[in-house]
Length: 355
Image 1 (cartoon, rainbow, N blue to C red):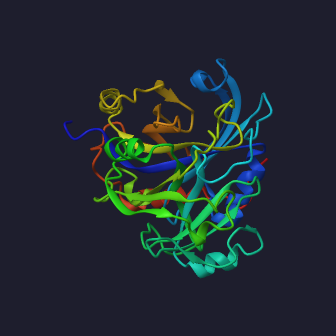
Image 2: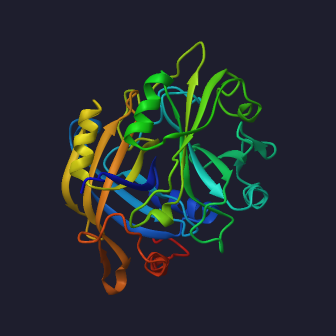
């Protein structure tokens, strides 16, 4: 189809950690990620450019918050000890430094998370006037909670799923075309260079930054676009300096945010588009079958080497215990799935992850 490739939205953010079930429990209790799409131990055999040139055993859980937003892929090595960054992470370091989550009631979210590791003394506003605050998860990963009025389901938890990410870049003028032309973030919500009060309590937050917040002009379309919703990418460039590469001398899957993943249709067309843009696929799975889910995935790098994943979903489990799977192979890629069908994913909701 001539309108492919099509991006339906951010599907998930990858979180490298040392204990998959402990981490999932934290995200379930505090951020509402209680619906597993898959829970699987296997071998990562296709990520060799990023796993030391050899396959690595891993255990991953992809969990959703059914309020809306992207999921969290909680990822743990089984055969090696995951490594922390060489130097303590600072915002503006090159790579994904902060995961954004959306809130329907920012005051309620601040209250609900007050006993966690809050980095913001109070709810603040960003240069757009959006209310937000920062905290750390149990592994020290930076999290931003941002107010939003874009929801799949407004009843339930105080906050929703992943809204986007903050990504450190070395050259804003080089990075902006990548995020606009390949990933569709074609609307600038702000572009400012200064020091920021709302960064004051973040590691490295007292520096001066060029700070650009991006979104997409048109709503996304595709099977799960209503669930994933709108999203934002914030790019940070340190003025009068440069951050460290967050994954310098480490492997994909080590501690921290390992990738940002987009749900797409038209993998072949995306391959051609990325090649033409001088950002060719560095990993290309072909068809894969993880048992509970099937499709294709691929990776590219942004200008600073930050990993962006594309997933084209062919099969997704709706209710695993009765073998109810959704086959997307023959559907119109631009057509949204019925709301009742997406809501049926919530039938897999868990109260206590099994370990």
